[in-house]
Image (cartoon, helix red, strand yellow):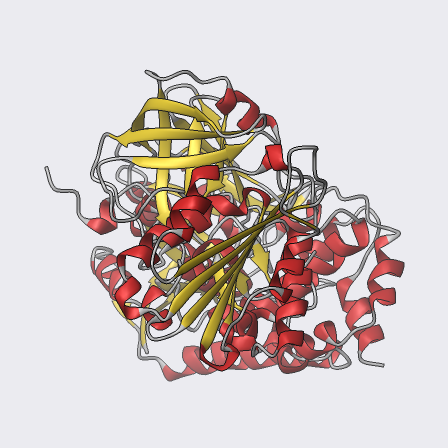
Length: 330
Length: 277
């Protein structure tokens, strides 16, 4: 693994320079918490580093809520997304399998992926519902992201993970290869401490090797009971980094608008003849668990839940999927 | 300009000129289309057919896969989009995406007897299959069609039955759920026709295509007769919305019916308890 470093104040100046040729989105904190913002020069000082996940998941940058997928897109300025937690980076693995599929390559998704430099941010803390380690996902990126970033003792340290990341770092003249073992050891210690803390706080949760069989063998009653608190609002799927179901809406001129959809909404599987396998709310509720923990992992060998915990935070019915898993494993 | 496969826009339909609309029954019409770009399909594959600005829906073409200059799609008026389709007149345009999915593996039927159990509008994809099988009949032992419709008036492609019965190696049987005064044939659901046929089950395959209730009880009856799970081919009906294995509307267990199907052997999908839902 290659490491580079740059002083924080020099990195801030570099970002200002990068704004001339890139659109930059980065994580910033405000009174509502942490989220991605489109960065202007004045915002650079407010970018947050190494804080657990922003409110919005990464998918929104690659799969807009609504877009016309039949008209050509104007060429876009290259883009940097800075501050991505690893739960969202790992979520991209499933999105890539679906949208960069060899048979049916989605050119809109692909163009955005190619046009974006992903700079993830190692998590040096955890939020209440963070449980990435349960799914064998580390709180820091080990693949997919082009670079990973750490702010430590006034120094920004980059971990280079892809060729694209390597090319990018070479354009940052003030970034120098980092060989200082003490800094690297300090980072490793922080990694270990966060990982240990996550494992300790979620040690009762069944891991990803068990979740599939727990869901597929579960009695329908547990889903029926919990679905009594579900109002089919789709918040869980909206915030999820891996839920990407969509609708195609026809517009005059044989144009199509692709709009995010959710299996939690009534009518998702209804066919013209009237049959609807997910007519009842309990079936829609269970469907999300089957899809995430049984079907998608079987089909794509990717995690369809990365343990970000956003679905728990977003649910107005206070449905906590971790509590359901604890119930299932009893 | 040659568009590389990877640069093709998978969401964009090809325009197709509607050259004829054939009335098959009070609720069923066949649309004859000439696509503006080269288009071919394998029997059992489906397309997404759209009405400009209204919507699109999945249909398996009912014409011969050997004919590539035009395409026939048989549509039952049953919902929002199909109602608009039924109001279309020749001369206009429709949109086509596809073909999608895995059709019937006709080569696997070589040297065998092929039993086709169909119901209602399921005869549309079956007609395409029959054309494909007629083309390779020298390689088949025989083909038996058992088809049921609700009433005699609901039976589509009526001339098809006489033609098949006068074709070497082909037998076709019809039944209706409810007879009228002129009907002299069988009365009962499609599976009742299975009692009439002679078939060497060990050396056969069965194809089932029709409404979900018929698919379920058809499969149960075929299993009772001695067909093995892997000898039964089912054409599954789900909400195939994108056709690309992406939008999620047609998931049936770990399968996207649009991409992994729509034709499955019963052996492939029987582990999913919700296949008949």
